[in-house]
View 1 (cartoon, helix red, strand yellow):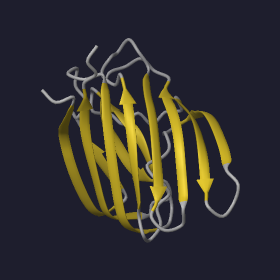
View 2 (cartoon, rainbow, N blue to C red):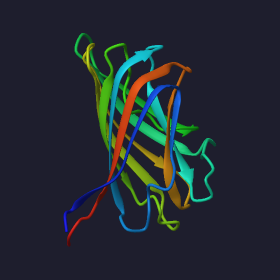
View 3 (cartoon, one colour):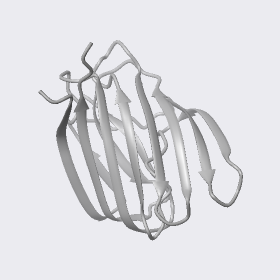
Length: 168
């Protein structure tokens, strides 16, 4: 069996939010999430929130995050935020789009925190980012919400979720 299994592919057009429910199961402890965004209305970031096993979006202030913002035309910038109501980010979108590769750890293990690690890049303005976050709640997480942070529109959004099996 392959160590990486495609679980879900979702595409959406002209939306400000995408919900992926029931993509995380107890079959895997690690998930790889790949996003691609072509075009955008609103020039802003695509952020995320988890969906718990009851189907509710977790939008309370229990996310901590740290990220390193890397631009080609200026020095880097570090951000650290506690008690945020989402985690950041799947890309700083502009009209030419963005892409990301992320890993989510222990989402369905209700006895552990859910951790997130990612890298992303915009396609035109050399705006890159590396980040980590943690959901400071021990609960079973079965899905994820992608949304624009200012209500802009994702023109052509694609997300692929893979289960990652690590052999010991």
